Image 1 (cartoon, rainbow, N blue to C red):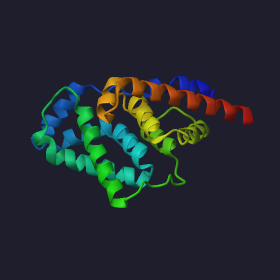
Image 2: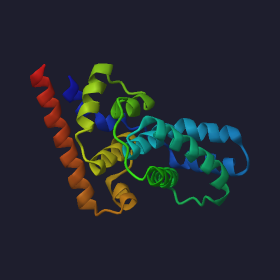
Image 3: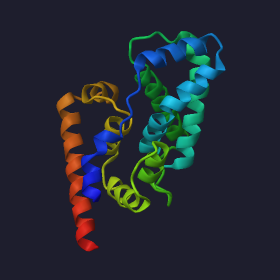
Length: 196
């Protein structure tokens, strides 16, 4: 059953209309707080999942999520639409994550709270708690880059070429790491099912 969930990971992505996000950002620039609420509702699970994939700490990811939308509120007047508002939001989140990592001067260890369970809860996943726990354990076996690529593609809905540009990697590298990560997840899930 959990392998079916792995095969359906791409189905977890929510499609967010970039033109609607552009409209929200223009309205935020004009001082519309309801537009900020709408933008948050549409994009917060992706921003949170991305921050969590870097910071590996739910509390720090929540801080970055909060700070990201404060930054959006104040920077919306400088936003210039290029048809990729989600990339702009993720860039803000990435910069805030890097600042948080610099503050800590080291990467945080994963706490007892689970990475994937938290990310998927934010995305209103259809996974059962048991399946989410197992998938979380498997996600922890991925490298940081692999985890970021999987989260950006599966949870946030970015295309591989967008991820390559965003992470400053060659497209074949991103594709290779993504497929390697999926193989690792599948192997780990199969191993877990055999142990049950």
